[in-house]
Image 1 (tube, rainbow, N blue to C red):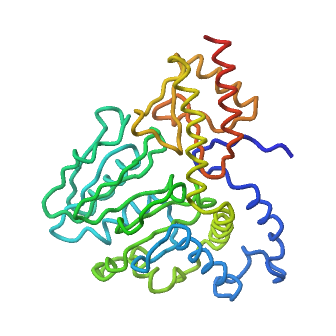
Image 2: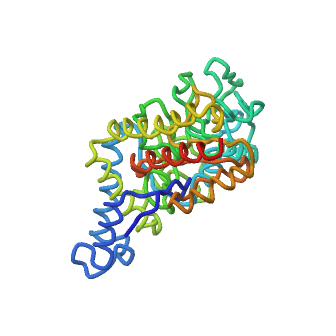
Image 3: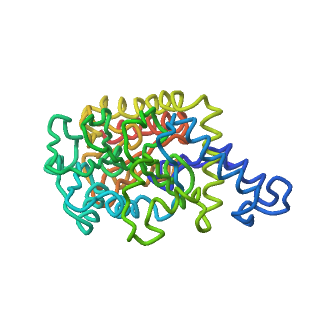
Length: 360
């Protein structure tokens, strides 16, 4: 069976060996006579899947014992509310750096909970870059500083993180597990799974344990991080199949040689596409400035809308899926998450050069 070149922004490509393994085990997981989807979340067999996912994530990301790993639902969008509900205490101010649509949405939810402050923003430049670290201006009484590590819509990414005397929180939904990160620098990391971790349905939260001690008691049970920490994320039925798929993806990353190898491969993939764009003499125009370019989402435009439509139509005929830019910015976007193979990026670059020669 011929597989598509999948450049979808999310849900996105999954490693073929992971899909094949899930296919093999779908009807009879570990001789239980049941699918993982049918197992009780209180069973020994599922318990092993659940804990293996946590153990592999801790190993691969080098997560210290000071931090807990939680499995939640609701995607990153629910975390936009849960973060301030749990961590924005009375008299404190939540600080946000605006680098795109998702950080704007995170700020919008925080405003409903308490006092907020925009510590830096590149909105005036249509989010073409990540603000310089020295331009971050914290408020007084800062509760935390929130960033979005990678911006899928605009194709920008933080390549250096703030090092300030406040708790740093990051939405890493679209670049978690794609590069080595010093988890100790972060008070909390959250990520929807549907980019690099697995299918949609599970959200990973990595939280420094001391933060749990000061969470307000009045929060609804299912919106309190302590509920998940104290129950090993098994207070109610978790998204068991999504966590199973997460564990398989983590196994695959481990088999590849870990995150350092994945990071090297991701940079190679991005370089192939950015080189093609830069050598096109303006036929393809990148949205992101060079110092802020994402290794996960390569965004670019063509000379006009008609050419863009032709490009996307021909690309689809050639088996390239998901190249249309986000509806809010248009143009094109190649999302090259961990499971997108190098060969797909090489094939896309070849098509882009061929297309340019025909329409230059």
